[in-house]
Image 1: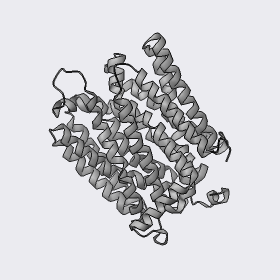
Image 2: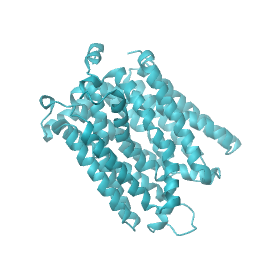
Image 3: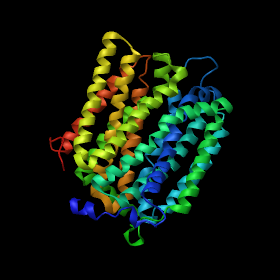
Image 4: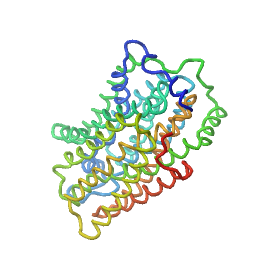
Length: 418
């Protein structure tokens, strides 16, 4: 897509006049928070859920397998996106969205009834499956309306609001646990799903015209996915995102153990987690203000290099001087702020050439950045041994690998203004 194509991409004014840009930003962010809440709000309750469902016993040390309460959801969220993409390109955005939201609500309530750890993991997988439908629609709607730097700027504003959830979700989860058992968290997820169902039913118009819809069959779906794989920028930035975002999932799943076991900050875990999420929110907002002037590649490539360098520095300093919280936390927060400068830009770079198959492109990108990231994150998170060194070394490896992929994608040239 060249510059003229980006200029011709319709904006929010193409929507029903009752839905302006501010409401669209809030709505897309709200749909994306279904996923964030299902992950981040769980974090303070992981030990309780593991105990209540028979994985651990009262008073025992946390079991690394409790991380699968997170990863089962992530896996369910990842692979099914490959099915949701062609479905949304065939039936439009609204109908698949409503199926996903209703399924998310029902499965959330079913989780309340579960008393077996492995059955809970199965329901968490299904919860992720339905949530992925809502996420695909949210991304496809944005691509229906924007392209290029305008899309990156819009998504950065969405992510700025979206990042409020990781800031407050662990604290909110902790608050729920003070007045209700862990089942109350799943009841809240069902309530939020209902709120989004009513809001989108009443306010979100269809953004995919009937004449632009693709037939739903295996040949059409395969052609669409092959188009994604044949597009150099799309394939490259999907792979780069899928790898480097494994660091984000690894930390989220092991964050309670890091703050509680390594640094003895269990009682203030929600506060420190909110600090890291806050830095990411500031980075997303900063990106929304700068990307149209500086460019997606300059910002995201710089952020990727900075993330890798800080991770390496933390691994070395911890190996030499031990675990020092006043050193670890500020540097770690800055490193994770880099995701706020990578996420929206990598997504826009991958999606930009694929406007005619936005649903399928969104599905392919979501698959790469959730299933791949989830599996990689699970592998790195499982290496937690009471020290942050395995995590940081894993982050260095992911950052370096992602950088190599970006270099190959860009034919060895970084920081381009294209």
